[in-house]
Length: 282
Image 1: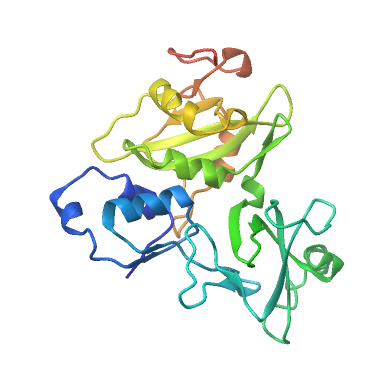
Image 2 (image 1 turned 30 degrees about the horizontal axis):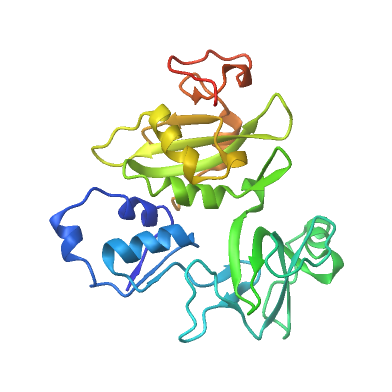
C-alpha cells in the first residue's frame, strides 16, 4: 500500500516509462490519496496493476469521515458509502434534496452525539450559515448513487459555470492529467467578458517533457464536452501551493489571463497582450 498527496497521483501516472515503472507492475494493491476520477484510477490499474486507487472516503475537519468504503465494497472513482454515523444528502442551491445521480452540494448531519464540531470559535454567523436547515453544508459538490456511494465532483469554490452548464474542474483535471507530457494541472475560472466563467488550464510539464498549448488544446478537444473546452492554456514551471502542497487556485484565479497565456479567441482577452500562436476556437 502507498499513501500519496493528491498531486502525486497524476504525476506518477503520467511519468515517462522506465524499467523501474515496469518492475513495479503488480507490486502495489492499494494507492490512497485524494479523490480520483475513474479515468485516473483506470490509468493506475493499467500501468501499475493496482487493485484500488483513491481515498475511498470523504470527510472534513468539522465532521471527520462521513463516508467510508466497506470491506469488499470498493468502487472505482467513489468516495465511499454513507456510514451509520451520518445522514448525507445532495441538495440544490435552494437546499432542496436532489434525486440519485444529480450533482449538488454535499450536506450532512450526525446520527449520534459528539461526533462532529459544534460550531466555529467566536463566529456565530458563520456557524448559522453552514448549519442552515439543520444540515451542515460541506461546501463541496458531489452525487450519490442508488446504493449510497458518494462521488466527489468538485470543491465548491472551484466549480465553474459557463454557457448555462456546470463544469467540474476536478473531472477536467483528471482528463488533462492523462496526457503523457503533463506533470501537474490546475483547472480554474477566469473572468469572461460574456459573463459567467471562462475556463483556463494551467499545466506544469512532466520532467523532461515540453508542452505546446495549441497541441494540448487539440488533444483535449475530442476528450471533453464542448461546453468544457478551455478558452485559455498556460504552461508554467510550477503551480502556487500552500505549505502542505495544495494548489492555490485562488492565486491562479486572481492572476487570470496573463501575457504568457495561450488563448483560443483573442476577443476573450481584455486589456492584455495576446501571445503569438493565439487561435480562434473552431
